[in-house]
Amino acid sequence: MTSVPRELSTDAPASGSAPRVDIAVIGGSGLYSLFPEAESHVIDTPYGPTSSPVTIGEIGGRRVAFLTRHGGDHSVPPHRIGYRANIWALASLGARAIVSSSAVGGVHPDYPPGTLVVTDQFIDRTWGRADTFYDEGSVQHLAAADPFDPMLRSLAVDALAAELGSFAPSGTCVVIQGPRFSTRAESVMWRQLGAHTVNMTMAPEVPLAAELNIGTVNLSFVTDSDAGLAPSDDDETDGDAVSAELVFSRLAEAQPRIVAAIERIVSSIPADYASGELIAPAAVAEVLARPVTR
Image (cartoon, rainbow, N blue to C red; front, side):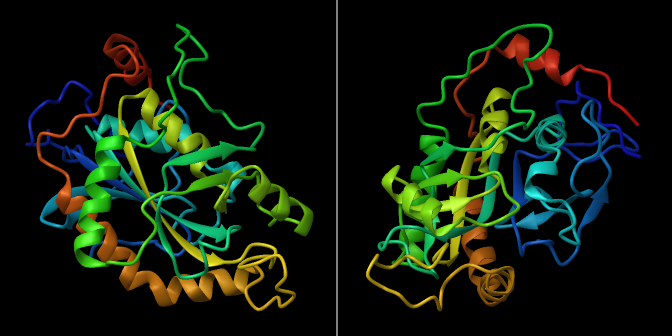
């Protein structure tokens, strides 16, 4: 197994360790690989195993670490994902920015199936998930008004506007527990809460990254109309009502488009990018110095 030395500060990896990276990509449902050729590394963490081995390769002219959120065979349900392990592993490699992809349902008529969304807000409706690194040693209160890094979002919006033209530059996602989908009543409620999309994994993944001073930008793909209530409450057809078969079918069709968008976003991130220090660096260093488990 690969154990990454946290003191490493150069691009050259120490013998037997994974290379350092500035950027990581977390792949959502349907995105299980990113590179035609890649190195695979098992990263030991204090929080158990990551969802998948971390692969390192090139995309958008940058060396990037990639981890698939649900495992390579989609065997890890949203409420059982080792979010802390995943984020800690990427931080231990030096990642300062994470580009994440997500499959989402649309609960607003302006977000029909097929829409790409650069998410800017979320509403957390999950429960029972380990959602902080600071439950021992010290208490840290994360400022989360803008959960996705504003600079990365701006870069992503500009990059996609230059290439795609049509996409949603913002959107609020309600994060539900899963793995079941919404009832019709819940789908109505999500829209009433101000949500545009619904997903099962953005929390606690995004705030955990912020707790380690890693900026995150999210690219969501709308696969369905959740419980069949979009694009309008008057529409009684259920052709776009969510089902696992529909979600994976549309993700397979859209995968080249999603990967191309991720590549554009990655290539737009400057080499000297650094997120703001939302948590004191000394507190972050303490988390990264915790002993790993094997």
